[in-house]
Image (tube, rainbow, N blue to C red):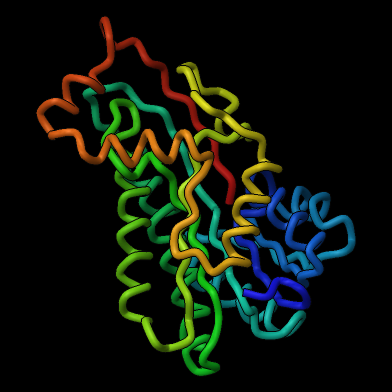
Length: 258
């Protein structure tokens, strides 16, 4: 993908990876539109140099309207990056259905809704890039991340299925799987976060991957190797390796960007 002069719509750009990526893409001479629920935060990210269209990805009608506003302002997007997301740390071995539903609404249905709004136009034009930000947390199940991990696994599968189905149409699908990134979403985590990187580093990795048309963009390298290797561990052994030590006293924390 040629970033210079391209039009990119970044959804989930009010903070964290999305905000850093919007700035990185603009620095590479892309025309950027940004969306998220918090218009004031978006305005600070945009700094008067990006198109700002607030939207809640869980509202289908609002997403449709936002897609129309973006196209009216900057033209049909050459790429749409969906990185809106919710993370709630749960209690290992428990399942909070309210939390699970919120994760599904934002992370899975929110991503699907955004893609569904831009995909017909991209297919009709015969070009475009759909970039979905999932996570290496979707590679294996981890205690305390039952909802988040399941959603990330669903996102990875969704994007992979679309990639296969769109082969030969001119529409590319790119899956982004970050490891730990220092953002407001991870700031309240109470567990070790190995190989953590800054949002700026994550943004550069994503922009590089977009420019090189990589189907999968996974970073940092050490976390990518670790989690891909974890996929090879037998399921019974993985349950023992991933089990929390001691008694579970994990408190629930919530972070979101959308």
